[in-house]
Length: 531
Image 1 (spheres, helix red, strand yellow):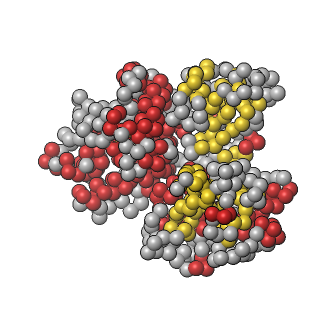
Image 2 (cartoon, one colour):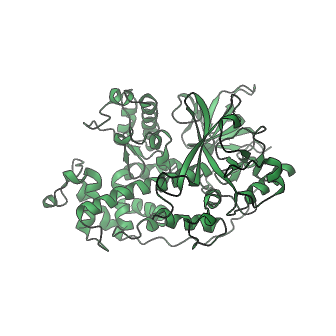
Image 3 (cartoon, one colour):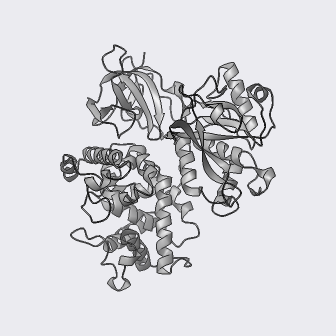
């Protein structure tokens, strides 16, 4: 492994994402490259050779070393709430990571039924925080680079404060290494007198020594220049019974789903009042996405920003102005969505609450301030006060199953508004249960856009497996479900339906051609067969 080539890959891929997060700190992109390579470079240097970016991020899991901190072993993990589920996921990820990297040590550990991974994400968040942040691990939020970066920045900024470097405008190489050492060991275990010889010892070098070495290498690699957009040539017509996309031709990375976007915003800003930084600055981005001025004051009632939040998340998920009516008013994009449904067109369609059960990524639209306006009013009007938020999960509370939404300008105790969640009760058939919901509901906006592409772009019917190694057929839509069998590259299968989850899009497939569901496969690794 040529270290310079690997760090160049990381800088080319992620520098544009990292640089804005460093504003106002003395940290550098080169230090972030060094930390990432030290933490997970062993993994992504191999994963990048045959996997797309999304899978690289998902399989950046490691650290199987025994330790004294929680969870010390399998028994300690499964003893806590949802621990058994977490262990199943953590053990399965160890197996998948070992197979995908080809690293024999991890493959051997994967055969041990008691082993599991403790570190998650490209900057490695430790499983010791599972009891405090179970959703980060169970919902696989480390697969989002932005969320991983945000968590790493919080720890690094804490290290800057503890070391007395927070007010510096730049750091020396030694100071940079000290910040990284504190990130690795915690401030209590840091001693300036030890210099670089502290932190994890890999048998040859200390963490600090490695960081200093990788930092020097990163500094020799220039920042990537922005790519010039071009229109790719149209691919030739695929022959019958062949994958629609020719082998070896890379496809553009799809934007993350609206669910992933909304959860990322929640993780970064929930609990922060709208008038306080960094949320206030982020709301300027929301306003801009909704077609408003960045200078609007979010603390004023006339500048409500919840519709701007939905517009921002929709735009970030790949929706275009032709697909979604970006606006600072919910009534505007809901009116357009109802018109789409009436004309049987578009990827955002307004539905009556009695006709459409909400799904992940849909919008729940309701009245404000005690109003009782209904679907027919929304079909004919705009300009009325209302609210909508994005469905990001389903859960059971007090024996009642409901949809969980994330929205902007949600209530905040002791404040005026934040990025927050709400719970909407569902009936036995999965429809919204108005009898258990206080605000009068208006409609559900069905979202047929997934990861930037319309559902129609992934047709049902004959598909073929397109993967370098093999594709796991699972008992459910997620890596936490057990593997039924492995499907070789080129395996023919029939897709019966697609289902979207926080971990991505999964296909329900039939292997025998008899219409019976045989299991689930990750949809990124199958291609439709040309008719």
